Image (cartoon, rainbow, N blue to C red):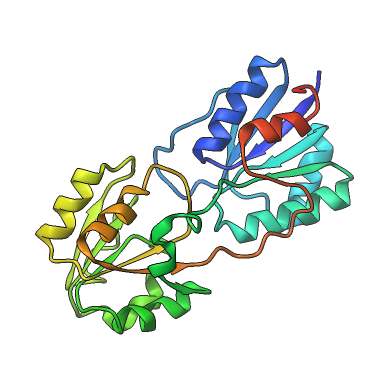
Amino acid sequence: MARVLVLGGTGEARELAVRLQDAGVSVVSSLAGRVSNPALPVGPVRIGGFGGPDGMMSFLWDERFDAVCDATHPFAARISGNAVEACAAAGVPLVRLVRPGWETRPDARDWVWVDSMAEAPAAMELLGERPFLTSGRQGLDHFAGWRNRWALVRVVEPLEAGVWPAWTVLVGRGPFTLDGELALMREHDVEVLVTKNSGGSLTEAKLAAAARLGVAVVMVRRPAESAEVLVGSVDEALALLPGAR
């Protein structure tokens, strides 16, 4: 029986685990553990880091995996880089599954694109004084200069109390509806949306809402991918993984 390690807690990772299991593949999923109460995939799950590429390489050897599918978030650059190094050292095939981004949307030509979270605050300040930040909790330190100015922020996990005194913080995870996003942006008079090119449908409604309301968008580009085998769908990944073809 083929044995596959799936990295990531994305919807694509969970779907892949189901379909691998249905195909008779022995699948183990690995989650980073950064989100409390994550949606768990089927089958065995390990939570936590590997201790870098060497730790992952040892895990691959010890558990005798035949292949790895990196289905982590498009912005999980560190774990993706570690997977490339570990799989190369262990001689284990690696498939990188990453959902398509939003750059093909018709309104993408109107967005202000930046190369990193570090560049987002400066672009944001030029576009409005009432920002809506949906770029993730880990990148908020880049907005330290906005700490005492109003902002609407939506995160999956609560922020540390008192650190961002002037911000209105919403805790929630998608899917979000177009009607809900329109109502939210109208209620708070949002002028500029800051987000990452994560892709997918769960949070895409905010982009349609911004386009309808004339809200400016600052979009952070994805980091470069380093894996040699890159696919954009679960079907494509299954076609390359042992035991699932």
